[in-house]
Length: 66
Image 1 (cartoon, rainbow, N blue to C red):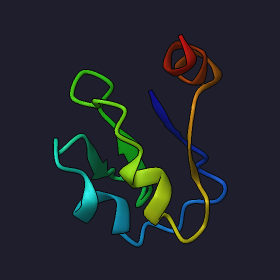
Image 2: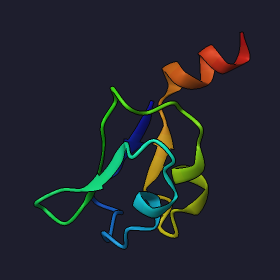
Image 3: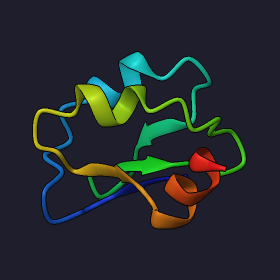
Image 4: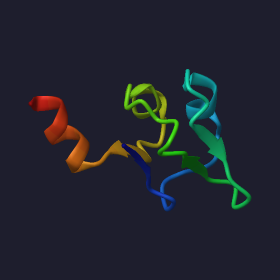
């Protein structure tokens, strides 16, 4: 699934606005967080993040290639 690098995230909310599943929210710490139960791994949040703070985990990338 998608993973947020809290060091890079500036809490701009671009990922929240683009997620069709509502899986991404801004937490109390002001950083994005991904609800893995809701995430469908579409990658939209990864594409729109201006800070490149969201990535797909290696496990996800492997599953996509199968």
